[in-house]
Image (cartoon, rainbow, N blue to C red; front, side, top):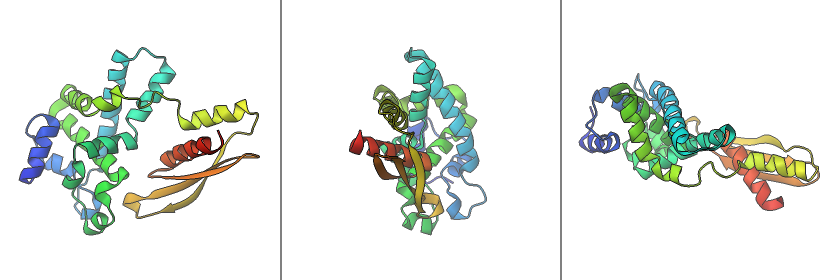
Length: 222
């Protein structure tokens, strides 16, 4: 069952004492613990609930076109954003990890933090329904929505436009290295444009690494 501190954390997160404690505990449980049930199924559900809640929110407050709304949505539901929200509420210390995953820094892994944040959204949806879960998401994501997340042009799109504007071939991305344990994998990606140069960057997923590489390229050559 939930410990006292974790029970208080979840009560503050959800706005009420957690119903079905075993389900919320499942949402906090990483596969490295060896438990039969971990957060993956709830993460699958929470990812979809988060996307719908943010899309509904943006539709009501942002009168931009479909492309701009999609850009903002993708930024707000990204692993980076989910991990940032998780860190802002101190989620890491409540995640149940196996010893090796904990020793490898799993409590501060973007992958794990983001996944568990989505799993908690899934647990909220199952126990509290969509409306209450959407309210929880609006509270947790308020600073990101009010900020610039997703408003600027995506770095990969900006790089493509730069290449076209300078009559260069389209940028090419390649995986340089994948390293770290499976639960906290890191990716190093290079992006190059023929006749201009190349830049490298790392991320917790291929997509994040490609985005960072595009930013690095524009900072160097743009």
